[in-house]
Every structure is written in structure tokens, then in C-alpha cells.
Image (tube, rainbow, N blue to C red; front, side, top):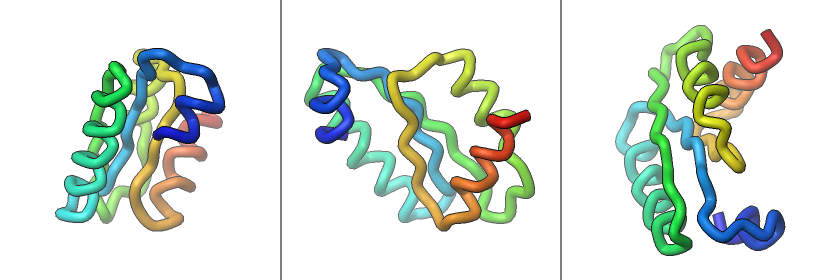
Length: 88
């Protein structure tokens, strides 16, 4: 969060957070929310199931939110699902 906030010169970052709906994803979500909050920003948490085959609902939320950046927690397939849905 700090890198992107500094690099993009954001005062109050608006962040979309896609995370696996498991304990580690919820823990990661807490870290991101704390870091963004410390910088005066907002976070929209978008959980995704571990067994998800696609991510259109999460991507629609991201598009509607128009965040400054998207943070993704999970294995490589989580990122691939989100990127594929964004291309559609």
C-alpha cells in the first residue's frame, strides 16, 4: 500500500481488495485496511471463494468503484481469474 500510495502520489487512496475467503485472506484484508486507513483512504473488501471458477461479481464491483489500485491476495489462480474477468 505504501509503495503504490507514494508512487502514485495519492493523498487518500481508494483501494479494491480481492482476497480469498479464508483465514489468511481475512488477515491480509486487516493489514491492507489498516495501512490504507493510516493514509486516510478507503478499502472495499471483495472476498472470493477458494474454489471459484471465475470472478465477474468482484470485477463488476471493482469497475463500479473506480479504485486507485487493486490489491489481490491468493494463489496465482486468484489473480488470473480477476484478470480474465477484467478482459471480458
